[in-house]
Amino acid sequence: MSKAYPGVRALDRVSLTLRSGEIHGIVGENGAGKSTLVNVVAGAVTPDGGEIRLAGKRVQLAGPWDARRYGIAIVHQEFQSLLALSVAENVLLGSETMHRRFINWAASRRQAEAAFQQIGVVVDVRATMESLGPAQRKLVEIARAVHARSAVLILDEPTAALEADDSERLYASMSALREAGVALGFISHRLDEVLRVCDRVTVLRDGRVVGSWPVAELTIDALIEHMVGRRVDTFFAEHP
Image (cartoon, rainbow, N blue to C red; front, top):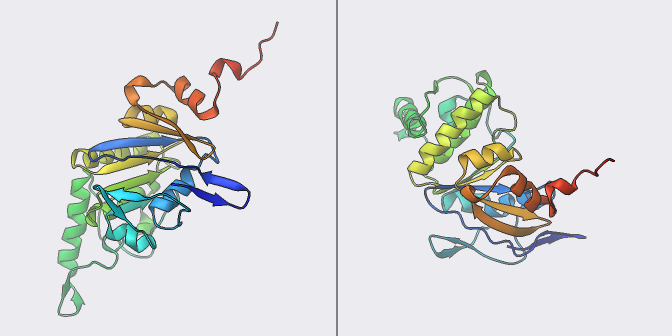
């Protein structure tokens, strides 16, 4: 993918492969191109060049609805929920089970509960979103993607506002989705968690791909060096 804005080349022939049953970390400094890449994959930004292939076939994304139609889901850093509605309504969002032009709430709630079962968590689907904490709201957004049978799920800084225990729940849900064969992209500035939960990592710098490596071949220092383009031991001047 390539994408330029006036005076800025946000993406310069960026190539990235997400594999089924794998968590792929995407890291880079601010301005590296991560957000633009996510917006292209989400159908929110039209690239200047390049292509997206899903299961080997080229797909055209005219907008976010096309991305959803092809089974691509994004969980953004900012919450994307309707706080006044119930958990079940947020999971289903227009795909509720109907009976004679009326919503079958019992069946719809069972569908929402089934989505949470797939990611290994229990949430009261009757509760309103505004009654939930940050971690549960994130899990609702993931359950929404599960209910939509998304084959590709990209999580953009999902733990940025979470405490340690809540992050652990999110990691467990990601592992469950990996086991179910979903292709996951995981963007985070917390390099320790990237090395912990991901199988591979791609580093972006200045809108370009520096490289992709199995996690087993990386350390935090190595990631930092790839991100900034110089060795960690050169960051600080030596004092006599």
